[in-house]
Length: 305
Image 1 (tube, rainbow, N blue to C red):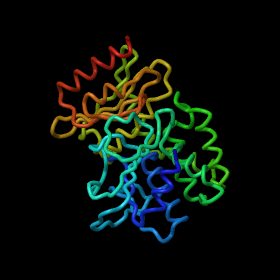
Image 2: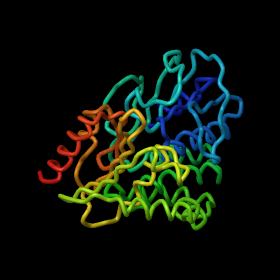
Image 3: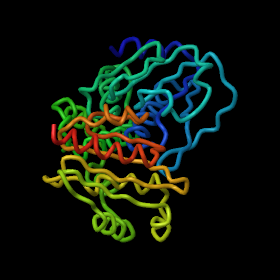
Image 4: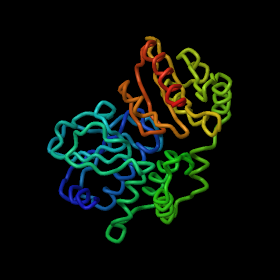
């Protein structure tokens, strides 16, 4: 399935890479890992990473007016969650994703829900053509970070032998596995205090754990709503939690959610509220109080079913 992807990359002189808003390591990793790979192997091409960059690990691109370019959309299945503009001016659109393909807007789709991360797909693409094109240590580290985090260090139930094979391939490029784990998973004292606060606020019943926060509560921790939701992994690893999540209520009274599950499927519920993700991890924005209350009932019912 990668032959068409390579042919389109070879064909276009300008390539724009998209990913979802509020990016995690898999979104950043697949976007910038592929960007670096293209630039390293096709230095004559203009390659841009679309979207606001809030991480010091990645470089914000300045993008002017473009047209007739190749667009590659990574780690996002529906258009509403894409961070960036100009997609309508693309000559050809490729979507690469490991989420259910809920909205078709692309000319070519590459991926499947069997993959644990979009970085796993990009690593497999690079490995397919490893005898023709190089994957640098820098690019391998970016992809490995995304694969590592989307599998929660290879602990999710969608981690497969292929996930581990791709991790091994990336590791073979000389990455520092130990330091990458330290960079990703070790916490500062400030983070430790926030995680302790989170855990003290857990509401737990019917095998469903959730923390409900307000913007005002986050001020002492100097965290944005999105940053607070990103700590949802701190509630994982508890056998009694079938579903867990963090909700942040903004000044308008709307909730944003980051949800995870141990075994049960939850992304179909999230999609009812214009949310997205894969079956055990998803996010939702702009929930009204009535929608928030309804969602709680549906999640508990899913566990009981």
